[in-house]
Image (cartoon, rainbow, N blue to C red; front, side):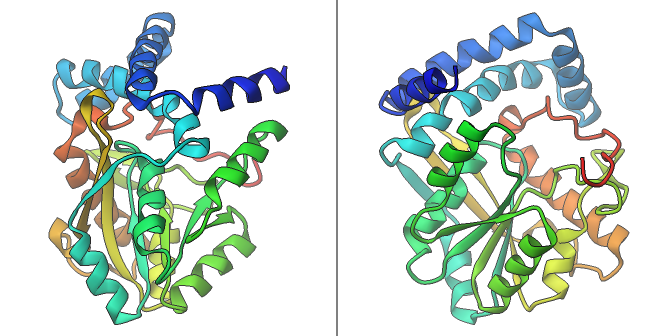
Length: 284
């Protein structure tokens, strides 16, 4: 079975992006139709953030595209990527202070790290934090796909955190998804669109353990498979002030910065992600 899935994955990686996105759109709506739990969470989270039903429905197809595009992004030819705000990266790299990229579950966050590696990785590589897949065949694909010139990975372990700190202290870049729910003891409760969520404290710890600058970014998925557009903003652009050394206050500031990005394109946010769940026990 695993061999068949690997074959299908590699076959899909050769397909044009418009076709994959069309299939993904159908896949998203199939998931929506078959899962009442999915529908309830989708509508509840979008409504909590103040967005109408139309935004939630528009995100259904985008969520499917997020899955269907992975074979191409991991194993296929490079996709077309444009930039908006790349001057913030240029300025941060010139300062040699390290760059921490914070990206919510918005658009195609997989492309953001790849695009940085392709354009800036020869000057300073970027390291992204990831949790290894449980399936051996998927771990094999992910390891080969995510580690490429200018792009490194760090596991969600103490050794991985030390790797991130060392990268920032060396003036390199690090990428995180700060709206993930970490295990208990590795986050704090802070409001996200007016409701308590449990974001990680790692983002603030990395900044305070280094001289790193924070940049907030997201990758827009263009319609009809026309590629992607990476948007980059300074942390100051979010209007939340300098990052506090208090863990709860810092988590709230980062949550507000992520809210600002989501408002730029709410139909591409992953509303089905269980953002408000209680944190799992450490080690699970």
